[in-house]
Length: 168
Image (cartoon, rainbow, N blue to C red; front, side):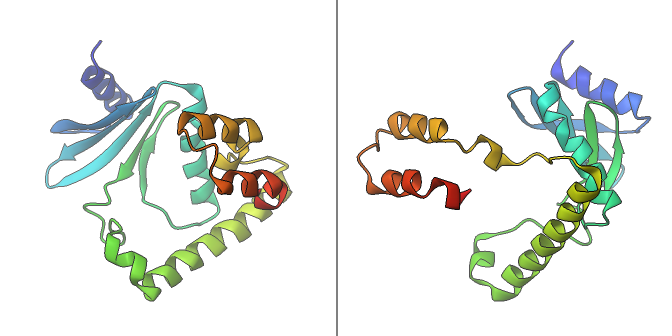
């Protein structure tokens, strides 16, 4: 079964009507595609690896905590269909000018504050550790990066290693 066929099957399983599917990216067992229906488009993410399926649960948690995100249209155990940011009436893609715009930075900071406040509350109540990319930030990984990038003599690595626990 081809990748487009897998995505079509996932949409059919979710009982989602569509006109066409346009692949966006496929990497490491995760497929992302734009799904068109009438005058609208959506983004389908399909996860073949169990460790990537955590994104589906994370969207459910964000929704339950009432943290604003792209609208979740539908999901199943291995795929999630989201509002397409390109068609959103609320959100838009960031751009380089946003980096110099204090109003944008303020809105992002407010969102992260809400995420962390509600996230800490969720973890306290449920006793669960949510996925964090910092879980993969280890001294072993730093050592590998140094040698892979041939930058082991750069002073920044000594600083990171000496201050590792504070950085975490």
